[in-house]
Figure 1 (cartoon, rainbow, N blue to C red):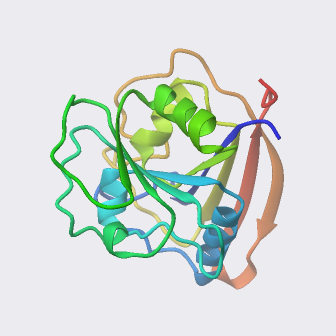
Figure 2 (cartoon, rainbow, N blue to C red):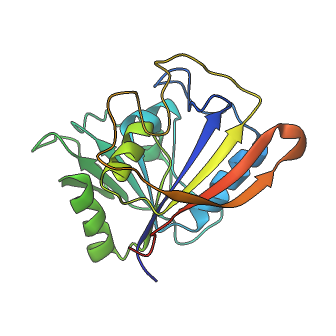
Length: 212
């Protein structure tokens, strides 16, 4: 099996992932949450940004599954306080990536600290921990980095037609409006499922050259 990277996001009718970068999720349906867990089941590792981890109070676990996927969190400075839910939940080993610091005094059992850039970290997961499929659940800035490095193979979107966030400062799946990509990324819609009364569409996009 080739190494793949996927991501899963919910967007409002106007293409936003939140009204505010720190607003927690939970504005979509129970069916969307069920889909989130099913997508986790196919991953060897789940990765999120620290802001998303804290805003959504995430444990990054999969109910009734053994083994659990690795739980990976990206932070610029590694300023965790130890109260985050992930550190008090049974699940896969935790890997913390610190991108903008060379040291960190945070230590916990079953937690591995990495000081590297995103591409080197993902290569380490693949080479040293047997990860063949890594799955991103937010936030927009992390997905933006995956797109900038041209690492994303599959994008799952829940399009929630029942919600409008609005506002030019509301974040999208590629983060805030802080610039453009170095080059376009081309994806094809490969699946569309309508959720009926919930007013949501479940969309799956595959990168046109996903074979790399």
